[in-house]
Image (cartoon, rainbow, N blue to C red; front, side, top):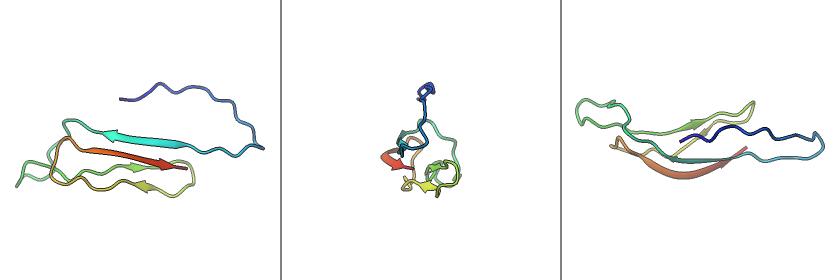
Length: 71
């Protein structure tokens, strides 16, 4: 599920941290025809920051990560 974006005023003099929670996925498409499963991961990109890549959840169509990343 995705939350609706909310407007947040920014102040250039105040540093901020964006925290992203990666929860789960449901009914992903099959990517490996031999097992009818997939090895799932999430990539999060934000501006010019480094790309965050979640752990790989192997052999599942309904992966659960419960991971946080910060930018």
